[in-house]
Each structure stands twice: as C-alpha cells, then as structure tokens.
Image (cartoon, rainbow, N blue to C red; front, side, top):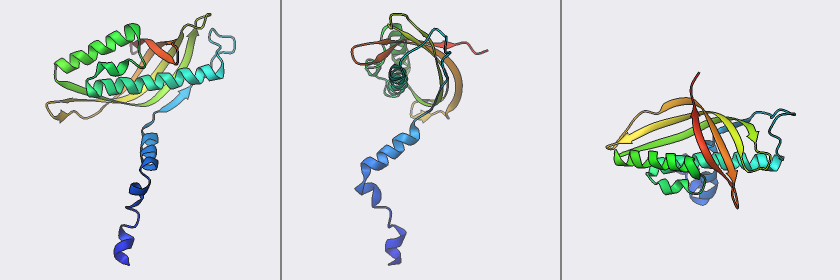
Length: 173
C-alpha cells in the first residue's frame, strides 16, 4: 500500500494532459497593467476595442519570440505588417546567418493607449516591458539577461485583428 501512495499523483498528468498544459501556459503569461487613459485625452476607445488591441499586441510578442527562437520570420506574418515586420524579419535573418537563436520571455507589460487616429485607423501604445532574453549559439545557451525597456507600438486594424505596424524601442533615460 505504501508503494502506491508514494506515486499516487503521478498518473494525473496522463489523465488530464490538457489541464496541465493549460496550467503551465497560464504560469508563463506575463503580468499586464493597463494605465487609465485621460478622460479628456486624445485616445477614447470602446472597452471591447481596447481589450482586442491589448490581446493582439500581447500575441504579437509571442509571435516575435517564436520567430526568433525558431529562426522563422514567417511567424511574424500573423501579427506584424509594414516596417515593423520588415525590421523584425531582417533581424531574424541576421541571427540565422550568424547561427544564433534568441529566446525571449516577456514577464510584465505596463501599457498606455497614447494616441488614436480620429478615423480609427491606428492606435499608438506605450509599453514599459520587463523581459528575459538569452542567446543560443553552437549548442550553448547564454544565461538569461533581464531587460527593462520602453517601446512605442502603432497598431492598425485588419480584416480580423489589430496588427503591429510600428515597433520602436525608446531610448533609456
């Protein structure tokens, strides 16, 4: 009887793999804080639009991380367009040519809707983000480097989602 008690919970992941995958996925999600917009400011959007913009922006971070980790710039297609996609794809090609892979893990985003075009064709986000990046080359993984940075992102609506059109790092102060 004691033999079974020592490993009695080991069978749970086999019976409920999707539950354990969901728990692991949720543990990896970054913390997100949305700063309130000014009541009389330049950016007033419906709550559903704000939710969609934030959701799509965070998905863009996941796509970017996967593109760099897999050296696959095509992974950027779903969430980026224009100059943001061109610059990120060029960076992926460059790291691929050097035989490197970058592993990004965003940990926290402090977001603020900064500007909305009057016709609704773009929304500018300010993002103060904490993330870890590690570089892998020649089967060696560098220890993760913690980064605190600020980005400006301009998102544009497409047929089904908001895509990042501009993704620019802000200089550190």
